[in-house]
Image (cartoon, rainbow, N blue to C red):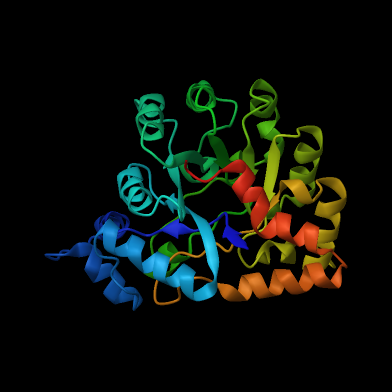
Length: 300
């Protein structure tokens, strides 16, 4: 069984926003962006949801998260989740610095299948101890079964690079250690740090060791390893298993657009790594599927 804890839902609205930032003038600006990128236009949220289900079926993936990749695009993901509630779990990006952010979280969590709020502090440039963050997380924690996703460490958005768009990120705001107050304030709220902390691996291990509600996802190429001379992906998994254990590691790919589709190479690489470490079937089953189902149970 394979569940993917980290997939982006690049909707038409997502590409429309990029087109606006790029200054493209067209009848269908989002489609103009996908043409520039040589990617498939996503169409309606329903069509994109169906496309993802077909892709997951092709690779034998049971369930996945769908991340709304800009604030305000939670509606696109909600439509997709409602269309395929047994296949998708709704994740949505929140910028706590925007007016009405807690109210937006409240409304979104009222939609079936919308379960996890995603914070990108480096992208939106705020400290994780800010009162606006506390208000958002307090609202989230009131909803049983919800979770918090916080991108820490190195942040690079490939599509922005391809389009020549600036990324005015401030990585100083993405230290996993800054999550400790939130984790202690809401000890029953699962907090997911993607990409093993994306370069801040030691800090991610420390916070996960200190707070039992912190999870690490294994997604993407994990190219951040280049910042740690001599470090390898097998060593990353070995240390994560030693410190965090197999019950708080979530497999993910960071898949996002078509025609590339679901990134099977990430699965194969990580499966090979775990086999090489001698991880037994029980460990692999938890990382690749069962932990996700435990955090986000199937809808009744």
